[in-house]
Length: 216
Length: 162
Image (cartoon, rainbow over all chains, first blue to last red; front, side):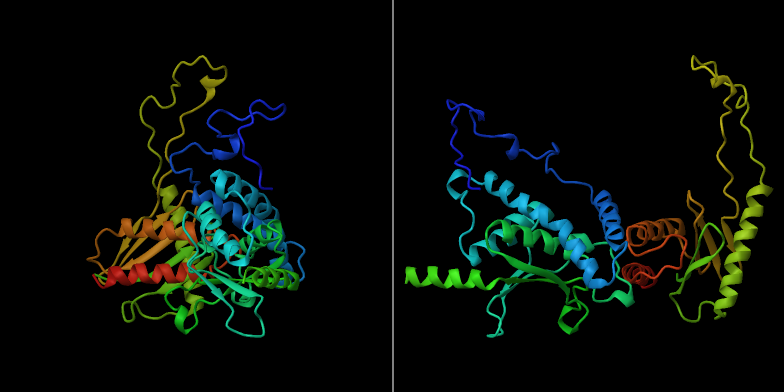
């Protein structure tokens, strides 16, 4: 984490090219915008959901499995996205707000080509550990219609897993879950509107408070 | 110009989707009758594909000389015949679109409706997007996908209001 990023070409071991661009800076895909086909992703994701659906006991279990599929992606993406940053801003996010902005901006742009739509902090004073990342139409759900008998399910649990991986990797252990809020009165315009509920572990808030105290 | 209804028939002749867009265009028939309609149309379509014998273009069977061994035995396979495509009555017109895999889309429109083939292809596109890419859809089973319903309705409404 936080690789030094120095172009230490004289040191033994890993050598960096003169311009500092390692293979980590280039996408695998050489096309101009380095985008992938949405159709092939849709089919792949469809199979991932079907795979996760085998031998599950309930909706919670299914969401858990989707979450687990996303988790390692998040862990790796955190490293990758940071190493692609300019050397000065390569440090991992050190407080909750910076982390969430990193997720809303960098992570979302890398994965979906746009930022997440909104960030919110829980207004309930009893749950100061809860933050919400809001996406009006998650890309993974573009072609997914959940049957009525599974209405609580949101397949964006996979994306929640990615977010959870990023939080865990940055040493902000959290539980992230995806909830559908579209279809209710204000969500009429966005039927697929999804809230990613990020619930940080108590120690994260404790540390956050300590840092805050020292600064003030 | 109005689109009345859409029916989708799977490759076994079963009705998998049925939706009416315009009240009063066609008389209401019972679900059972819709199933019979789908099955009957499937059968008639199968017969019409046989009725129209495939024309072999001259020189089709005389294989072109080729260096590939065994190629001499390969007969150029002609396009399969399309079978029944349009059925027209005084009050409505039925257009059938048969996909490569044998799924049939039947669109009931009024007789003056233009560009039905464009409409039906767009419907097929929606079917491949919102039905085939949906992890909860089981092949050959009735289509129950909210997203497909929603997109289809808004597309047809746009055409009917034109």
